[in-house]
Length: 290
Image (cartoon, rainbow, N blue to C red):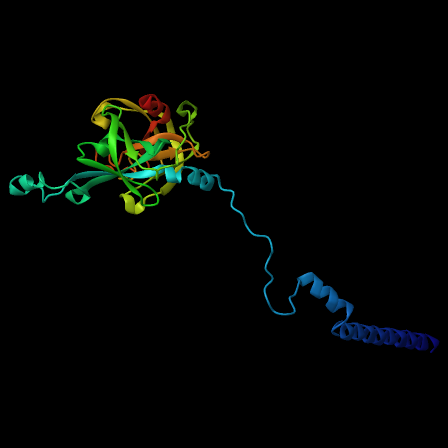
């Protein structure tokens, strides 16, 4: 009998303990739901809840320190479009040609036969000397240069060399003020980042920059590849298109390491080729203009 009474007492206290625990638990849960409870305050801090329901904007602005952007700005205004002008078709043989001898020659007598690029290397006293490819100005009746701002000027040939595919032309205009700096091309290494700046497809796309690497610092092109003679060039995979000829190939410091001159688009087996452009080394350019 006493044993049964002891068991009943144990059950009684266990039941009481469970009821007390449930009441305490319920009180804690209820208290945590109150607006100013410690739990709600801690939860708000942990989740960074914006009570107003609006986005928080950081006061810190992103500033770009891209080397490519800085290099482009150093050279952009020194790279120009070079237009090869030919006599207009209206000035053909016969009466029209005879009459034209008694007329003042102006830009209306010419039309653009082809377009390339050029790089201003010297500027002083209202004149500027521009390096370009020989094939850009070859057989031209007149040469016109257009800068990045659209200013135009007529150019004359100072010196040219078909074998090196280089030509130095001069404009008498104070508009062409920005001058590019030639780097030491002997220090160019395979794998370094480079950018090509020029006018692919002509003045409509002037100041176009493409990026790549030096695929081969010193590449020899054979006479059969150049249709002239063997030359040493810088090979790059930066996009070079028709109109880029005579433009700048620059390093990340904004210095000209080469003058874009050609690209391979197909092999002898008519295989399409991508990313094989070539530039005349800047040291060869420096020796030429001296």
